Amino acid sequence: MHSVFTWFAASAAIALVVAAIARQRGRSMALPVMAAGVLVSMVPIGPDAPPEPGIVLIVILAPLVFGEALSSSYLDIDRVRRQVLSLAIGLVLLTTIVIGLLSSWLIGMPLALGCALGAVLAPTDAVAVSSIARKVGLPRWAVSILEGESLVNDGTGLTALRVAIVAAVAGSVTMLEIGIVFVLAVAVGVGVGLVGGWILSRIIAHSRDAVAANSLTLVAPFLLYYVAEHFEGSGILAVVVAALFVAHSQTSDARQESRIDGVSLWRHVTFVLKALAFFLVGLELPATFTALAPDERVQVGVLAVIIVAALIVTRLFFVMGMLWLRRDRQPDEWRVAFVGAWSGARGPVSGMAAFSIPLTMTSGEALPFRNLILATTFAVIVITLLLSSTMGPMARLLKLPAEDDSALIRRVQTSLALAAATQLNDAVEQSALQGRPIAHEVTEPLQRSIDARLDALDEDEGLDAQVGLAQRSQLARLMLQAEQEELLRIRAEEGLPDSIVRPMLEQLELRRLALDSTGDPGGRDAH
Image (cartoon, rainbow, N blue to C red; front, side, top):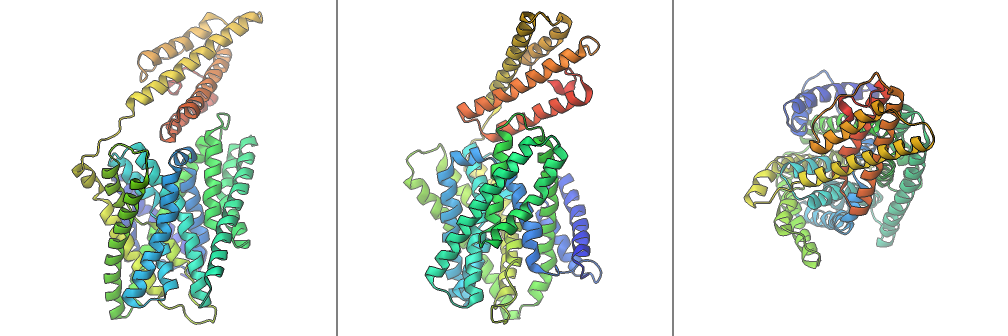
C-alpha cells in the first residue's frame, strides 16, 4: 500500500482494535499493539512501512504531544519547576551527550549521529510514566515532577535532535553554529507557542460554539508546528508551550463551557495517535532488523542493553545530585529517587523521532547508521516498557507510603457546598429586596440538596420539578457558578493541585450540562 491515506486508514484500524482489546482487559496498549505491527508486517497484504518517514513527525507526533500537554497542569508543573527544568533540560542534554559518546566509543558511530540517538532516547514517555507513577502510589509532588519532566523533555529532546541532525547531515559544523541553531530553535519555538497559545485561548474563551472551538484545537498543532519550523524554530516546543497555555486558561476560567468537551475529544485523539505510533514502531521492526548485517544485529543487541543501563545510571546520579543540592527536602525523597530513576520508560515520541531522521545527507549520499539507530531505538523502547512493569514491586520493596487525598477532597467538596448555600441565600435575599420573593417551594429542594451533600457527600436527593422549575434552574446555575469560583479560589490561595481540581471541575461541568439538557437542577448529576 503506497497511498498515504490508505496506509494511515489501514494502520489506524488494526492498531485501534488491538488497543481497545488491551484497554478492556486493563492492560497497557504499548506491547500488544507493537506485537500486532510486527505480525502485520510479515503478511503480504496490509499496510507496510510509511511512504514518507518524515511525515510522521507532523501527522502523528505534533498532535500527540499537544494532547499530552493539554491534559497536563501548568500550575502543578510550576510548583516544581526547578526540578522539572533540571530534569527536562539538564538531564536530557546530559543523556544526549552520554549516549553519543557511548555510541561513538562502542561502534564507531559519528558523534553527531550518536548524539542524535541520545536525543531520540532522552525523553521519557509522558503517559506511561504518569500512569505507572500513580498506580504505584508515588507522592503527589513526585508525580508532578515526573509528569512535568516527561512533557517538557519532549521539546528539549527533539530540539537537541534537530541540532544533531543538522550537524550529521551537513557533515561538519562549528560549535558556534550548533549554539545558534539551538538557541534559535528554543527561542522561536517558545515564542510561537506563547503567541499561538494566547490567540487560541482567546478564541476558545469568546466562542459561543463549543464544537467550533474544540474543532479549532484539532488543527492548531499542525499550524503551530509549521509556523515554528518555517522560522527555524522547534515545532514540537511550540506545540507543547501552546497546549500548556490553553490548558491553564481553560482551568482558570469557570465560564468556559467547552472544557469538558475538549477534554473528552483529546482523550480520544491521543488514544488513537498513541495506538498508531506504537503500531508503526512494530510495523517497522522486522524490516529495520532485516536490513542490518549480522554483525550490526549483534551491535544493536549489545548497544541497546548498555544504553538502557546508561539511561538508568545517568538518571539516578543526576537525580541524587539534584537532591543533594536542594535545601527544601521532601519526605521519602531518597526512596522516591530510586523509583524515579527506574521510571524512564520510552514510548512513541522516541519512535516517531527516530523516523524523522532523514534518509540522506546534504551531498545526496545515504545517511550512515540510520537503520542501526532505528533498530536500537525500538529495542530500547521494548526493554524500558518491560522494565516499567517492575516499578510497583520496587515501590513496595522500598515501602513508599501511599498518599491519601480523601480528607483534602472532602474538605474541598464541603467548601463547594457551602459556597453554593451562600449563593442561594444571597439570591433569595436579593430577590426579596427587589420585591420579587422566591417561593419556598423553589428554594427548599435546593437547600435540602445542599444539606444532604454536607451530611453525606455521596447521597442523592430528588427535587420536585413541577414547581418553579425556571426559577430553580436559574438558582441552580448560580450555585454551580459559585462552586466553580470557590474551587478556583481554593486552588489559587492554597495551591490545590490540578490532579484534584480537574476532576471536580469536570463533575461541575457534567452537572451544568445535565441542567442545560433537562432543566432539572435536582437530577442525579446535581449532587
